[in-house]
Image (tube, rainbow, N blue to C red; front, top):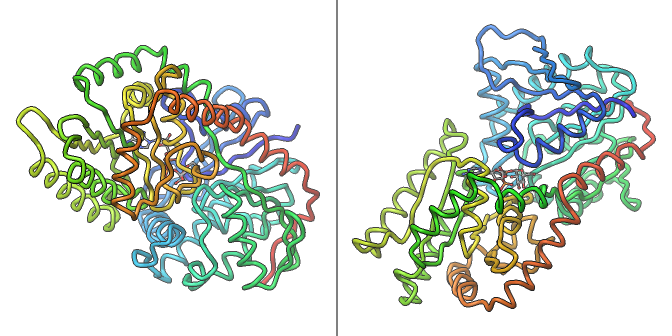
Length: 464
Ligand code: ADQ
């Protein structure tokens, strides 16, 4: 089997499985079994950067990383990736910064990543590139003469044609994607939107799961990412830290129903709308007061991007308002914590919560929804309230599916979840869990890699 090279913005962690999460563990397994290389940004910003990778060997796998200069970090990472592609692909044109400087920086950094990796490649390597940081990377590698199989997986949604068209360089960007052999998306709907763009905007031709355009052919398929469902369920039930967290949470609840939200602090996650829906629950169903407790964990991310700082202020204000208006001296309606939580403890917390509250405005998949279900006690499972705009909703129809913009509808869904019978909760849980086991993260990885292995590839760059 050929060596696997994984390219992603951040590399690892490779040693501590509990910290790493399902995706990193699944990738490490594949890398170890094939003697692989994991390549990406070191996470360091340094004025004296060199165009050279730092290589560290961990058993049979190697980690190769490069540093970024302050300017590269600002233009490529904060700029084009996180202030342009991220909001635009999540339908937030209003937050999208269309700055040519960012685009140029992104192109330069993608070329740099390709230039540094190229000499480390072997002729029969299989290369798997991840996410929106590297849309232009494959084509840069091809221009340097790389003929290996290169696949690309997009973790975030692919936007509708008209939304993408707002990006000044949308044509060049999509053209560049044709340098890859396989393009993987989270859902059929993402594939459909990509096909629609290629056929109607770029005048390509669709033929089954293949798309012909710019003189190249790519395979386009949905590979919905999963979690290690079995492992996560086991952790929630048996791990020491998980048990401790479960007991602590249960005790502090004093018989109340806990609603839990866990997110990276991001405007795509719909946390403000969620706060409004919770307030609506307290307003419209006064009997819920003192009976429910909403815990929102939101780990700060991308703190040096302006839009994220503003959102944080808004959420601070809203949570203060809810607690001020509805709280009692012995009841805090909303507990809002700005910090990450270790995965083991998180699993215990999910298990102690009767309602999982996952209502992003747009999300490629959303793994929290899957983790919440996997962590439940099969004898007495909680209920998942899930946004229709999360990729996960297509695989999880047994959740209560809501429109996150419909504040009253979401409040009503919380009330339905509170009163759902044990029998219905069990039936829904069993159906959801069967899906999580069938389409777990190992399955996702293997499906993608077999699709990539199945493609016969001409290996030339996209011209123009
Ligand atoms: P994210 O936007 O980061 O990922 P998500 O899938 O929900 O979103 O979460 C990823 C992981 O982070 C989960 O394992 C979760 O437990 C963890 N996490 C989130 N908040 C946390 C917190 N406060 N403390 C500790 N852990 C936390 C992107 C896309 C998603 C897609 C994933 C994977 O935006 O749509 O599902 O990639 O493809």
